[in-house]
Length: 79
Image 1 (cartoon, one colour):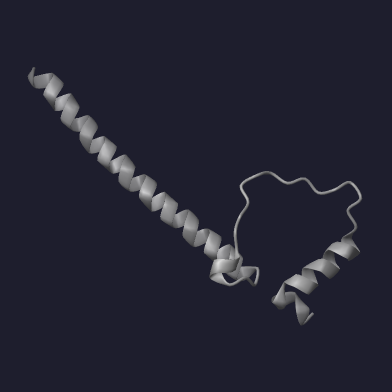
Image 2 (cartoon, rainbow, N blue to C red):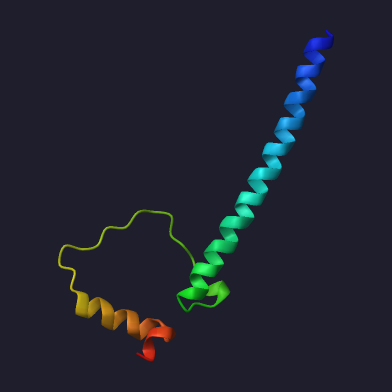
């Protein structure tokens, strides 16, 4: 009886700590995503990270990609 209750209370405390850690990690992820978007020249609400993986097309051309990046990223437009 007494040992089982002690283990139960320990588990509850650990669950609470884990829940707080998850909340903190989610905040950190959101903050880092916002910072990444800001560094890329997006406004806070305009930037979304797509969680799916992406593969560059086989016919990837650097000059075309650079031109598109310059068209869409204000920080690159001054180069």
